[in-house]
Length: 430
Ligand SMILES: Nc1ncnc2c1ncn2[C@@H]1O[C@H](COP(=O)(O)OP(=O)(O)O)[C@@H](O)[C@H]1O
Ligand SMILES: [Mg+2]
Image 1 (spheres, protein in one colour):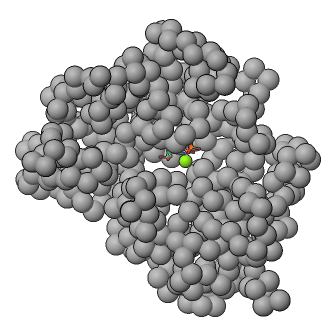
Image 2: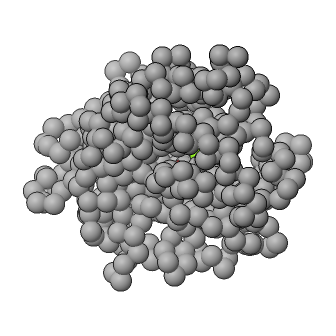
Image 3: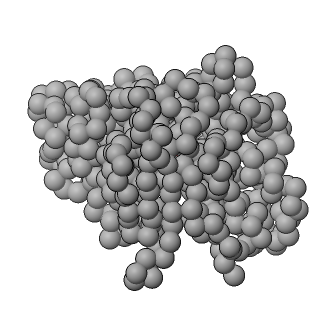
């Protein structure tokens, strides 16, 4: 069964410095001549007349009176896909629509407005008033219990298939952050400082993810990277990671929003296997140089991030885990987020998810250094960054983890992730 989805919607934009949205244009999804979905987008005339109008993304949908069309990505423009829910949110929306097969338009229209970035979607020519009421951090225990119920329901081995058919419960879950991307259960919560993404631990996690991810963000900051602010709190006796949203700024009038576009979009890539050759730090550095107001700083920041991911064996560093944002008119790399170590068996060779040099995805010093010029670094600068960071990660991961409450047992579990032997160029020469 497929749902009766509308074929068109309005796209709303919260302009820089504003706390309410305006209508930016119209998006239509239809079946093209060859039976494949085709997307069309056109900016509204009154939007284009605004002196402070900004484009939906930094590259593809430039401000102008033309009709844009695309057949790639099932007809969904990258900037819209980035505002659409991912694995976790899609599962919930599917539940909500009684398991009908939702269309891309359903996903856009059914996800709540706390999505990443400055865009919104709806069927009315005028945007709805912004959402004012968010779940409070005090409600985390309840949100965690609902997320647990969804996860149990998804696990065939658990045999609890109807647990989340309760409409109210799914409805509640839809309101807790389905529109944020990613696969891990999460909710958007508010406290007096602003909005946070709450990431819940899963019972099948190999270690306390909330504390370990927090430790990685702290370690990355110590290594000189720009990172999302984070902290660990308790809900019903369990740890929850709170990551401060860098695309929302609380003001007296409401929330200002930053535009946000993933590296997946900048690279014109997809999850599809054929497009994975575009998953590349080197190509991403080139894109950053094109779209960022300060190419040098952003290319260097990306180089540091690539080195850090190699040094903590973060093999989940795919292009949705990198983004650019624009709070005003200028674009820049967003603070780093979703930094997770892994412990592959091999101590000789590990691969990142994206290409990092002449030898492809291999996460070692020689490969990271091989394309230094594309990151606007001379060889000595690049070598200095790699060796300083190698020393920092090797020496600081353990005290940092312990200081934020990662247990001795979990430290044993993650120890193999850091500055693994095959990383350093000396290892290759032995
Ligand atoms: N601090 C943040 N501020 C704004 N958006 C964020 C932040 N952290 C993550 N995001 C967005 O939310 C998505 C999911 O978060 P992420 O931490 O990657 O979760 P997961 O571990 O499930 O992949 C990211 O892909 C990014 O688009
Ligand atoms: Mg992620």
